[in-house]
Image (cartoon, rainbow, N blue to C red; front, side, top):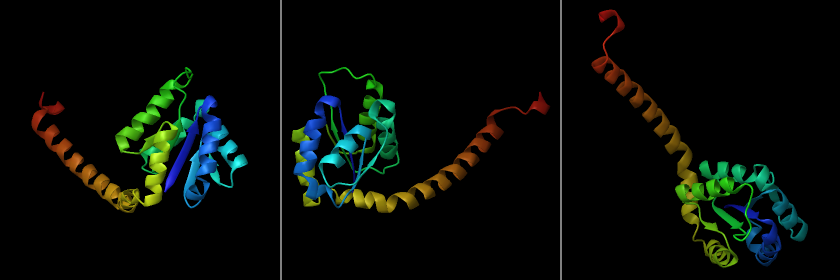
Length: 167
């Protein structure tokens, strides 16, 4: 599974404690994080994490791109709801994409622990099915939609619009 970690400044210590506690569970998975969060987790655990830019510098958007490509299975995002964030639109967009694509998100320790235990039990195997079927289904859909759309567009243009030479 592909798991991403994001933590606002006042939540980074909580994220480090969380990843230390569940280090053995996260070890076999592919891990991602925004810049500082990932660096701090790696400094305090034996986890290998691919880091993106810092959240305010585009890291949230980079994780959002993974979500939109169905390449992320779980997001652990410890937000600080008591501090205004300068990149709040990026945060909102990331959480919206997770809702759109059905990506489980934990925004606090309690929810994160529930999702981690679910991951440990194997409750995320439905994501494996999505990963296995995604490439062929999307490629087929694009070809089908593309050729159908061209025919429909030509048919509509031929029937409803007068030709320039007939006016």
